[in-house]
Length: 168
Image 1: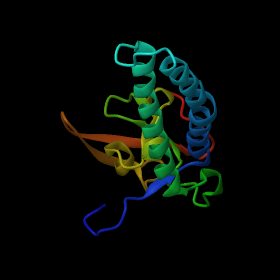
Image 2 (image 1 turned 30 degrees about the vertical axis):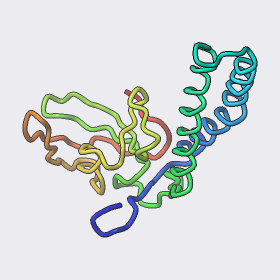
Image 3 (image 1 turned 180 degrees about the vertical axis):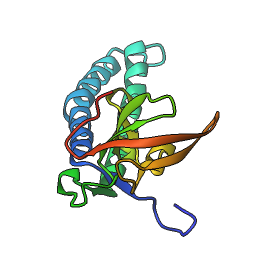
């Protein structure tokens, strides 16, 4: 809950929601049944106190069930925002792929996505991250101040697009 007593927004792209749904499906219908089968088999082997298959299987079941509950909660409060439907293409909003340059003219491309769908290896950053917050509502050519652990840095918005994943 936030200070105002409302739940934090859970913005997510259609791709991000599909990935969460795929993970949920995999856990529910592939992984969990296999672990249940192993635990059932191990339980039939007698003494459970020293039965590694049984002990590990029960632990893994708890982990899977916890992850399933987490995914269901995230999806239940998800607000799907489709970047392809963005009408204002000249400003940075949720779902935008943004190329920006730092003070040494090094360019970086990021895609602004939901908190629960971030994949850093794909150049995705959360919409509540410091970089995304600095970029939101900006236009190409805008120079913004970004607070970093090393101090304030200026970055310039080089390009904005709404068509897919970020290149690195």
